Length: 113
Image 1 (tube, rainbow, N blue to C red):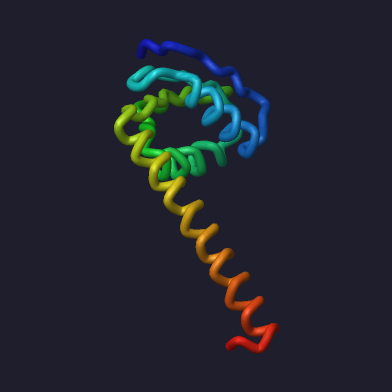
Image 2: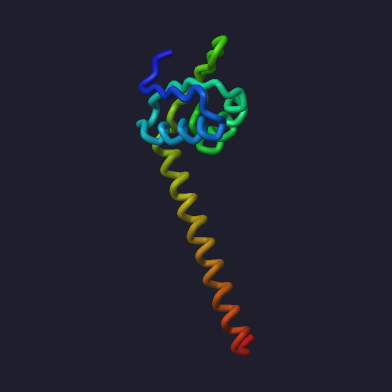
């Protein structure tokens, strides 16, 4: 399978493997493929779960005797933009909730409520 970039993460723990793969995947254009080489078997379980949340795709797995190869496809830009908008809305909601809590807390301590 043809890949646009290659990440050799053999010898890395599952956590570093996933972080490096997601980090490099973010540098790719929409639809490009990243080939990741690894040795930690836990990464085969964890990385697909992480990819589901980001809408990127695991398009192939090749197991070798000493290591494995994962092929990841970068999500489309429309989905990436909608995820960014969703994150922004969540941030605003949290800010509004904090602001509302501060006002109600200040009013109650001053005897207004």
